[in-house]
Every structure is written in structure tokens, then in C-alpha cells.
Length: 237
View 1 (tube, rainbow, N blue to C red):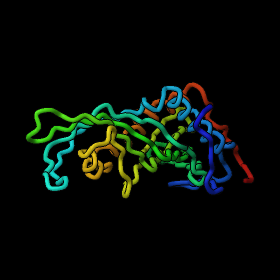
View 2 (view 1 turned 180 degrees about the horizontal axis):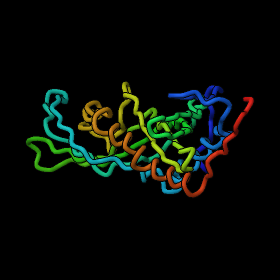
View 3 (view 1 turned 180 degrees about the vertical axis):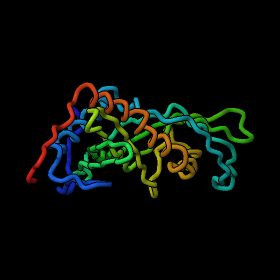
View 4 (view 1 turned 60 degrees about the vertical axis):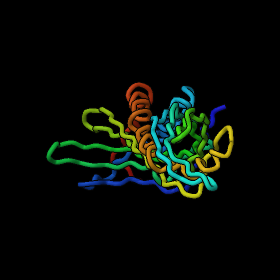
């Protein structure tokens, strides 16, 4: 069973015109088109496995106190990836068609937009801790659940040439008041739990999933599989 179940938030959608007003022309059912494109993009990633969303290695230096003993050294995070995603949805109020005309280029484009939200994204890393004064490193695994990542999808259609382009831009909210889980747990992980910072290296990689992972999938879908909506001219609504 697919994890991806569409949940719409709010109910408004509309036509926005930039640069020049275009009267009584619109796309036929752009909402269903946006839903279909984003849904199939997510389904493709699900079929690959959420673990295909990778995270880069990074190093964190630590200089803290554990009871009366100082803990000084470095943590190396390796083999990062997504373990699971609890829920995904599309914000209904972001689904819209945006028309634009460029006199300089003599070009009319219509962009179909929609925003995907990924809730409770669990990520995992292998962690090696090397402490000053200790001859052997410590090995743990870590899991952290990020509350939300959003991706704004834009499918840009050239009305004259009939070509499509795609952008997918990620946004990662800053995380506060959430702690990771280390395994195995010991006296060292009591302090490592509190020095872990999910707002440094990780958000950049999550944002990069937009252009590097989602975007190529979406571009292939709108180019080869899902036809762009038809135009309705002199439409009353």
C-alpha cells in the first residue's frame, strides 16, 4: 500500500497573471494535473525506497562536560539516509496556474504550481566518536525525526512551443526541542544526544533533494507521461 494519500488543506485556488492581463483564458483542470504530477513523483521515490534520499557525511567537534569529566573530540556522521516518512500531503491553497507574458521574448508561459509537505521524516546515520585520550573510537547509530520538509513544484509550459520545464524548491524548517535517539545507549550518548545539531549540515542536503531527486523525476513525467492540460479560450469562468 502506498504511503502517499492526498490530504488537501484549505480550498482556494485560482489563476494569477503576471506582467500582462490575459482575459478569459485558462487551463482545464490544472488542479488534477498538479495532483497527478506530484503524486506520481512521490510514488516513484517510494518505489525506489525512502532510503534513496541520501544525506552527506559530516564531522562535528565536541567539547562538553559529562559529570565531572570533560568530553573533547569529534563525531563523524556517515551513511546518512531517510528511514521513513510518516505522512505526506499537498497544500490545496498552493495549487494554482500562473500566466505570464514577456514582450521582450514574445513569449507566453503558464506555470502550474503546488507544494508537497513531508511530515515526520526519520533520518539515520552511523556515528563514530573519537575522544581525546581514548585509543579506541566509539560506534553508535543515530535516528532523528525532522518535523517537516516542503517542496514547491513549478511546471512551466511555453504556450507557443509546447515545451515544459520544471523546478522543485525545498524549504526546511528550523528544529527546536527535538532530540535524537542513539543506539546503543551508554553514558557517552547521554551527552551526545544534547550536542547533536540538526540545523547545520542536514538541511542543505534536504533542500538539495528538490533539484537533484524530485525535479528530474517530475520533468520526465511531464515530458513523457502526463499530458499538459488543455487551454480553454474565452472561458466565462
